[in-house]
Length: 138
Image 1: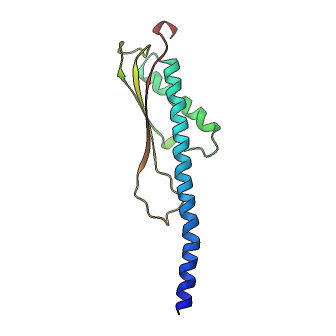
Image 2: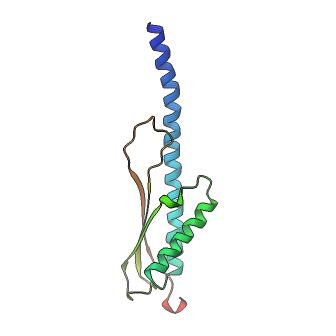
Image 3: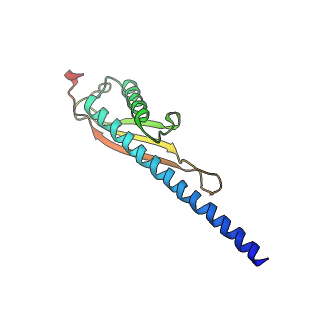
């Protein structure tokens, strides 16, 4: 009977340890991809500005979809929540030179398996930036 329990425990360890490693790998890969996508989106906004809040948000979503098309792991684009707001701006509409912005990308924490209990959490990346384009360039 003791050998049977030992075999069952050994099989559980042999199954759960690789699953835990894969779960950790999936989370780290998603986090790295989210960091890369957010850096590309922040750089785009910083270098291009925009003529309105909705135009900037649409441009950011377009940049994110282009970046995700090139990625190997590929986060689900529908699950990415994008928030971009100006924290300081001179013109109420125009996103121009020296305006500061905050970009937040958020996704649900990816799961490889349901066997490892994890609370439902989200991963988020927050980036702050300054727009480097003049209003006459827009």
